[in-house]
Image (cartoon, rainbow, N blue to C red; front, side, top):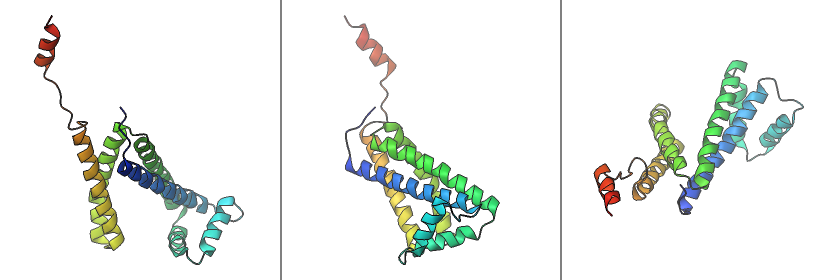
Length: 170
């Protein structure tokens, strides 16, 4: 079932798709670093990113990735790509206004909040706190939207007796 267009839902979808693009970049970067990246198109792209004086975050990420062994890089690469697929499905489904995507996004985002809180407690930062706050707002918005439109888990089932009585009338 399709919903009417909602700018906040589209914003959430764009956020999911941007996260998917970032995870694709991390996944491909991690997988390419397993074998060294000299001479590959991805290696040239990564070198160009690190050459940018404003790309200090990319440089830090690449420094952390290059310190990992080949097995861990493979796990990071595959894991990142799998999460990218998940975020892509969520983002595309939300962009198309699908109820299943709202339910999926609600469940998945809610399931990550305890892990994010744990990570915030272990390694506190304002960025992590902001991400948790954004995810909580997304979940609350989607739950409110699902409730308002009587979708899962808020659907209103009609009693079987009322349906039978209505159809039995001449």
